[in-house]
Image (cartoon, rainbow, N blue to C red):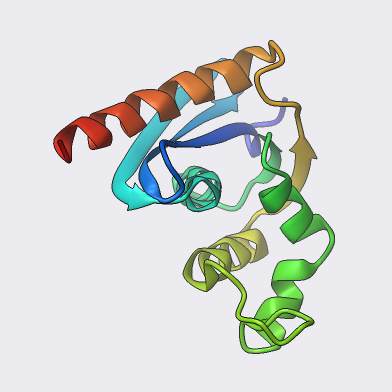
Length: 151
């Protein structure tokens, strides 16, 4: 795999929606592997899914070709079906004129997608995909850490 080709795996987790949440990401370039994770005390699952992808892409130090794997249809469809681009073009309004959710995160993600050549792949969650399972464990650990902080 060329040095500028990176595989990214991401996941988000939330207890309650909204509630404490966490995200996890794995970045792999050749034999080099890096894990990232974080969370928030009050968030939603979709925000954590987006944040995982954003933080992973933002960690790249130069433009890369990226294969990004996520179990979030919200993330994958939002990009692949052009929804997020349309929402931004329409002042963060959906086709029905309702406000699009999470415009702050979608805007950051769209900006990063202009830097990197990203191909998104949807994977079924909780189905034994090793990297997805590891990202879920990272996200759940952060969700639990932020949830415990609020008690």
